[in-house]
Length: 77
Image (cartoon, rainbow, N blue to C red):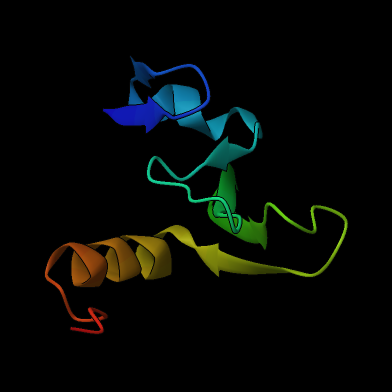
């Protein structure tokens, strides 16, 4: 399940693949990242600059990134 932070609802992962932008669940006042999945690609952008640049990953790269984040590999503490 993925959480739609904007609506506070959980959706099956397959529902996340509609191309709709989803905001991170722990957004702060300084902005967040948003992501959307279309086909085999996940695109990430800044919520503060939605018309600005974005980065696209394939699904395997995205899954590897999410696993690393959950494991604390990018913690600054």
